[in-house]
Length: 72
Image (cartoon, rainbow, N blue to C red):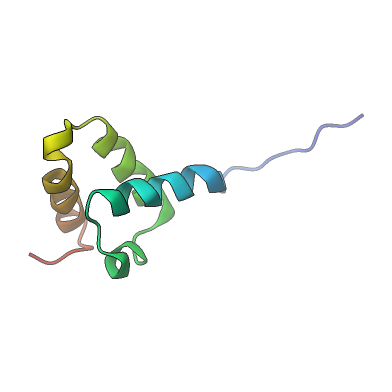
């Protein structure tokens, strides 16, 4: 039986959904988050997960500002 061939470029839906939940949990505005690419959502969520709990909201806001998704 032949195995399907997968091509790069698509992101696992469950990872993208989990990333969005993490970002929402730590204060990303929904309107802003809708404009953030899936790749950035996942990248930001991974960075937030490695940040100490008390610093996560501030770190997320800084990431969104630096990437141009959120104005100061």
